[in-house]
Length: 112
Length: 188
Image (cartoon, rainbow over all chains, first blue to last red; front, side, top):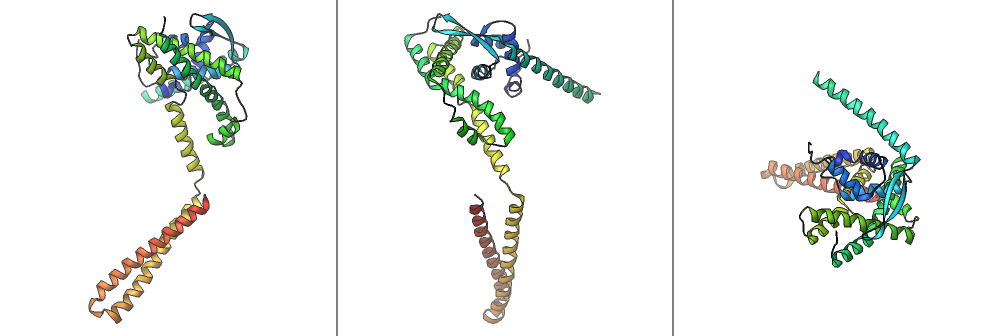
């Protein structure tokens, strides 16, 4: 797996979409998302940023929340995507396709 | 994983302090988007936000949420080989709401405010003040130098002329600086 440092600036614009995608794959709790991102190779991902994105997703009503008892005391929040979240995710991937397509084209032009 | 009682207390205290800030920070991002459209700066957005007080229920939930999130993070760090205290400090640094990104956003806002408030016409006027006053100083200095050189110090004509021109120019620049300060004060 390739590890690339200092991705935080580039990730800022896409982190919300990445987190929506992870939540879209199945019910998950907050810190487990950080673990998934780290397993994907985003070792330098800022835990605080992921937390803030989660709070924002909740405030913008993009996720459904189920509370389950935890071994640490307070109930743990588990996230799933609601309809609005799914629509946002579709929109994110459309934007991503557009962006990556244009960037690839740009890269192709440069190497020609 | 079981964390010590002290660490748990510390986490709870930290979460109580920071949870509300994280909620506000998430809310700012929303208002920031609106603000950008209407050309408002962060200060104005924060003033608007003060109308939206968080309920105690929301704050309690956020505190519990952050407590668990932080405990998970600490547990991971301990598993990676850090001591509990080290892990606690690292988690505090990682989860503090007023992070570097907020600071950079503040600096960006200040720069934006500065450049938005720039008025090219005023900059041009200030430049003309400097040019005009300097030229006026040189002319007055040269005339005074000529008169003094011819009538008072005929033996030191050139030196008197040069000194008078330099003094005249310095007085001109000083007058321009005073005018600049006055214009800057009025435009605030």
